[in-house]
Image 1 (tube, one colour):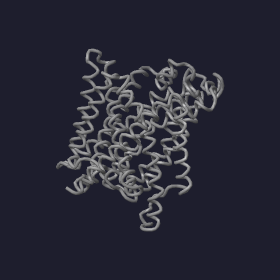
Image 2 (cartoon, one colour):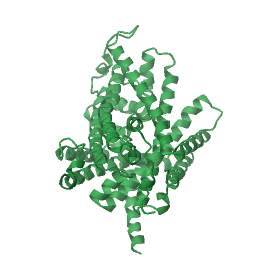
Image 3 (cartoon, rainbow, N blue to C red):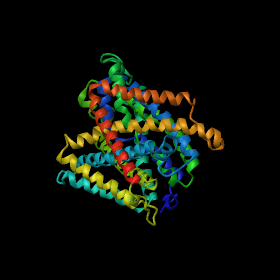
Image 4 (cartoon, rainbow, N blue to C red):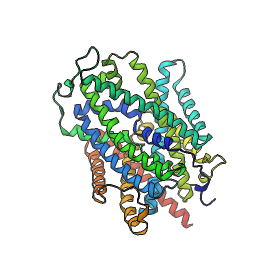
Length: 451
């Protein structure tokens, strides 16, 4: 088999693509991890999320331009390969695969912790095993089963965050029963930026990983029934929803709940709902977080399998991973990602402070590296398209090339900031170590090919 792409089924409808894009935006990190940023930066965490959100919007626009012009298997892996050469493609593909299989392990472990609260008699590893096996089965059935599951998961998350925004907005306007409302907590505990600008920038670095996932729609484009239209619409919807969902909801959190209460910030969204005296807030938010976790687990298996298949098609991974069954599913690639996820899960229980900590610390930095390569690819491919096929540029990056260059500069600034921020230094070092390993693997691949 020389090219696995024709065997893929174009079963994903526009509604699937819309929710795949939105589901990537609203992750468990928003509901849980955002409290860490708020505790550090204070109410100015809104600026942290706005900075990172703007960066993600720019990268998504770049991806949209390339995906609409050329919806291919592997998405931005192929764009990096064509634009920047085999090494860039190799690094992009394998870093992205690495990111998602770690996410699969992380989300399976997180889901097990939530479920154990309700069923304490079941061991965490049993829940973890069951969740991973369940979503492996969902992805093995067909791409449509993945899309349908993600559609409903994402729908629940979108409805939940919309209700949260409406309820919070009503509260601060003073229209919520039994509450005066207002935005007193925005400045009441040391001011809007109580700890200075450095934690705000640190928060922007930390928030980068929360947004990662929106780019899955570019990977799914090759299996969409209407790739050009679906990708364009999905990217456009993500652009404004990123700002509304993230920046808007964080603004409500810091207005309604005191940022310097560590207990409340451990579960910021639950704390807001409790402040509104909504009964069953804790249980409802736990269910929503579980939905976000399962959505990420489902998407992680899909994205990692398609990327590994694309790597195999181009000779950057063993050829067996390019094989596709009669249902249009790259079974070997899917099972390979699942197998690595099982190993990572085992490490989370037997070596949580060493091996698993390395995996967790390195994957966020790897995400930033992937975004940088996407931006450089867009710079190069846009120039080619304008000369060779301008009619394919039906969706264009704003302010090209200067806005793309600004995005690259901002991402490199984030990487540099990680080197001087104590809490981010270890993730940067682990991320660099992961890239060094991939460089060595690429060198070995070149040697083996030469022989």
